[in-house]
Every structure is written in structure tokens, then in C-alpha cells.
Length: 480
Image (cartoon, rainbow, N blue to C red; front, side, top):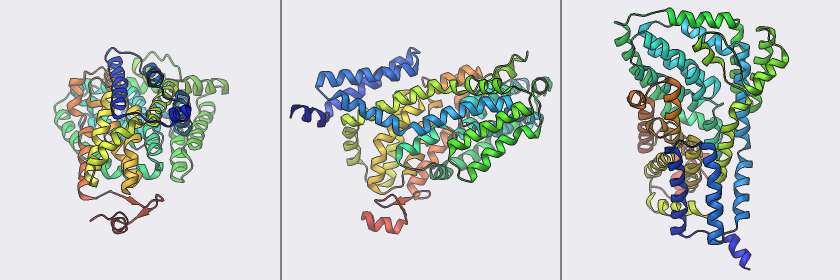
């Protein structure tokens, strides 16, 4: 009887608030001292174990709840590994070098910032990673921008707006897959839903950076040396040809045909591997090695080396580990009833769709500030808020979109966040320089609030999760 009670009991409000405060405080402290995020997320399991021992909760049940959550998230986690393999193959195939070389060939000072925004957007869409986009095309653009007299922070802002936009809507992105999975939605509907907030914000970014580019491009002395040296180095080490872009075409066609993203990315990687052997002259063994451990090249050109020395499934190992620990931690807290404490408080406050979405945005920002990572913030927000959307009959893709509108893109606004640490290090630009130009991160939440206030882009579902009209929703949920 005692064992049964121990297995079923939930935390009290004081215990729940206290446990979450300890976990959050530990994560924030470790972030401030620069501790490894992956290990920190793993160590949170020790905190939860200690809580279970002290207050006599069933640790085995709680731990199994974490394992169950990880098992449910294996799809997105495996996708990360396949994307790493794809990137390694695409570099070996000359796909990414060709994209870089062609992109640099069309740049002139007046359209530099616009091209930077578009190029990094495409890189992120095709690779599913803003980190990779910033570390490849972003590095090249920083060097070119500096040679044209464009302020470093402005160039970095264009890079981050493009990279984050592409990452946010890419079917290969980890957050784009994890968010709908957490909310019970589908990948396609999630991406479609994001168009209501992300696309208009991106168009505004295009206008703003075009105006800024015209301002600096008219008086800047354009030095083509950096551009030409980068192109020459790409051509010296790779066969640069339109045929190298074939893997991009293949994966786009597969995704448009609604082929599952995991086999689509694997096929995209295999097509890149075939080109690496057939066009670039790589051996089969070496190409498979690139898919496993990433591409490796010493070209003598520092920018090109930074562009291509990456990828491989091993490059995703730390991200997968962090995702497993974070997802498990979130579900263990939910199993203990910690999330219920906050849900009960929020449920009393949430009366309208606007308050529901606003609350979700606030929770997302708070979770992002606490955990310093996009994945952890989205996990915590999804666990806490998605049940409220289902309860109110609002489609899960609205919840997952709201999470992406804040937790995914809001990290660059927080100087202690892992995103800022990474981008500052890769691009060599201080937070204070680029944060004024992270325009996308400021505008997208505004459109999220506009949708919440007007009902534009809000979708409704019945108890079975089927889309229904607003009129049917009002009758079903007794809304005025």
C-alpha cells in the first residue's frame, strides 16, 4: 500500500516550485561559469533523484517516465544524426562549396546585406542548422562585409536573421521537428503555421537590410580580393558545377512529395556521396568517413577551411545527448507533477486565446532564459503549455509555432544564452554589436501577438484533433 501511494503521489505546490527553482538555478549558474551544457543537463537527473530520495517519491517510476519521453523523441534525435551525415556528404560532393562560390560570385556592395540574408537563409533551409550556416556562409560574409566597410554588427545581424529564419522553417531542423512532436502536431502543419508569423517578419528584414545595404554600398570601396580568393580556393579544391547542386534538388523534390524527412535526408546524403565519388574523385571509404566524422581539408585558405571542415554524424553527438537529457528531465518533472503546479496557476489566468498565446510566449522566454538552450526551452514550454491548447480546442501547430516564435529565436537576445556564446565566437562579433540588428527576433513575436488578437492564423480542432471551423469551435467550446 505504501509503495502504491509512493508511486502515485504528486508534489505539493511548495515542493514543485522548490524543485524547479533548484533545477533552473543550477542550470543558470552553470551557464554563467561556462560549464558544458550537455553535462549540466545530465546532472539535473541527479537533482531529481535526490528530490525523490528525500521526499520519498518512486525514483524508478520517475526515471522510466524520462526514458519513455526519450523513446518518443527518437525520430527527431535520429534525424539530427542523418543531417550530420548529409552535411558531410554534401561538402565532399562539392554541393556546399558550389553554393558558396556561386553566391559570392553575384555579390556587390549595394546588395551585400540582402545577399547575406538570402544566402544564409538558403544554407539553413537546406542544412537545417543555423549554427552550420553561421559557421560556413556566415564566416565568409563577415570577411567580405568588413572589406566593404559595412559595420560588423550589421553584417552579423543579417547573417543571424537569415540563418535563424532558415533553421526555423527547415524540415531538417531539430527544433522544427521537436516542437510539433512535443505538442502532438505534424511537421508539415507546423511549418505551414509558421508562415503566418515568420514570413511577413522575414519580408520586413529583407526591406530593412536592403535599405541599409544601399546606404553603405554607395560609398564603400569594394575590394574583390577576399571574394575572389574564396572562390579560387573553392575551385582549387572542388569541382564547382551546377551538377553538384543535384542533392539539393533531390531532397527538395522528396520533401515536396511528402517523403518522410529521415529517409529523405538519408537519400540526400547518399546522392551527395555518389557525387563525391563520381565528380570529386573521392574514394568510397573516404566518403563514408566524411559522413561519419565530417569533412577535413587544409586548403591554405582560412575562410574555406572553416567553411568545409565540419559535418558528420559525430558532430551531432553532443546535440543528441543534450536533447535526450533535456527531454527526459522535462518528462520526469511532469511525472512528479511539477508541471501541474504551474498549469493549475496558468489555467486560472488563461481565459482567452490571446491570454493563452501570451502566456505561452512568456513561459517560452522564461524557459529560454533559465536553460540557455533552444531545445530545453521548447521541451519545458511544450510540456507545460500544449495541454492547455488541447483543452481549449486550439490546434497543436499554433502552440508549436508560438514556441518557435519565442524560445527558438529569442536566445540571441539574451547575452548569457548558448546561442549568443556560439555566434559571438564563430563570427567574432560582440553581443552588443549584433543585437540591435537581430530584427527577426524582435518582429516575429509581434506578428504572433497580432495573430492572437485578430484570430488570423489561428486554427481550431475538436477532441479528436481534427480541424474544425471557428463557428463549429465556438459551439463546441461554448465560446462567445
